[in-house]
Image (spheres, rainbow, N blue to C red):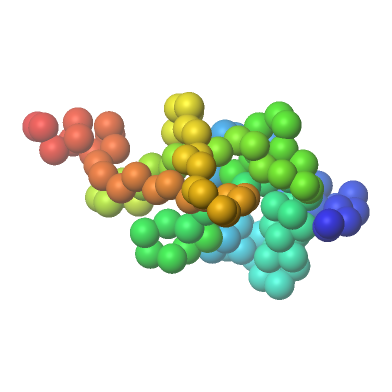
Length: 131
C-alpha cells in the first residue's frame, strides 16, 4: 500500500487530474513540471497515486504509460473503474471511453487488472479528412 503524503508536489499533480477528465502521459507530465520537480519525483508521485487508488494507468500503442483519475470506488486494494481507452492514430489524442466493461471470468485465475486500448481515428481527424 502506498502512502500518499500531502506535499506541494502531490497537490500540484492532483490539481492537473482534478481539473480535467483527460488522461495524461508520463512524458506530458514530466514536461509540464520541468523546472518545478524532476522526472523521478513525477514518476514516484504517479506510482503512489496509482497504488493508492487515486489514478489508474494504461499503456498506449507505443508503450507509453498514461494516467487518469479513478472514478469513485477505487482504493489501494482494488481498481473498480474498468473501461477502455481510445488513441487516435492520426493526432495521438488519447481518452477514457465511458462504456460498461466487464472482465470475463477465466477459470482457475483471479484477474486483478486489464487494459483495453482501442486505436483508430478520432472525430476531429475524421471531420478534417472529410473536406
